[in-house]
Image (cartoon, rainbow, N blue to C red; front, side, top):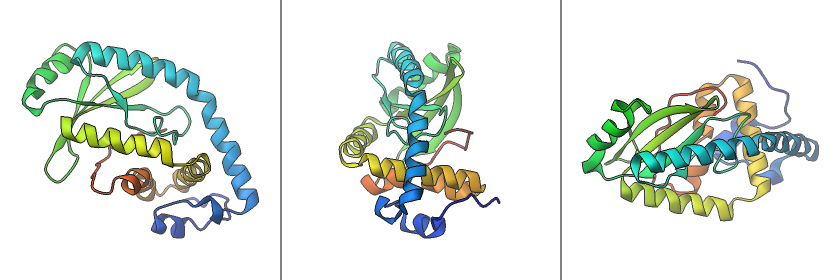
Amino acid sequence: MTNPHTDLDLSAITAKKWADPADFPAAEFERATAFYESMRAHDDHLLKVRAEASALIQEWTGCAPRDVGSFGTRLNLEMSDLDLGIGFPVERREELMRSLVEEGRAEFLGERNTSFSTTRLVFSFEIAGIEIDLSALTVEDFTVACRMLDQIDTEMTREERVAHTWVKHLLRQSGDLEAYAEWKLVTYARYCPEFHWVPIPEKAGS
């Protein structure tokens, strides 16, 4: 494990499960802000890819997707992959598998727990070098996820996004992949503690 240069106590922040901008020394927050703004340089390209992927998903599934990942919450690092979600009836999952996998449109990555009683199906395909992960949640879980994302969008400040993204970057630099993976979920847990999201296995840049 490497030790990234920072004045922050990463162990204390991860234990708290939130990065409070007020806890950042001024110089550290300046560095964090510069880094965050550099991440935004990729927005236009990712927005174009997301629009293309969303159109394909709606064509293939009949469902309008929502960005459920770090790009959607503006907490992404570098050229992130994209995580899109749809609400799809459980009783029609075999139909979905035929449309996406048997038709050769996407790779099936597996079935993962979303709560204590439900699961999601995860698929993957690529556009312009960007990996698109598509989660097919139950209709009810998708409704909850959208409500959570709306809350994050309206309540999480830009300063909090800067602080969160900087800590995420530092944790990845440290090589502590377990802490990094857990940190990627703290925003979801803060705004929707009842929603148990099991992540897709780690890929660079997510």
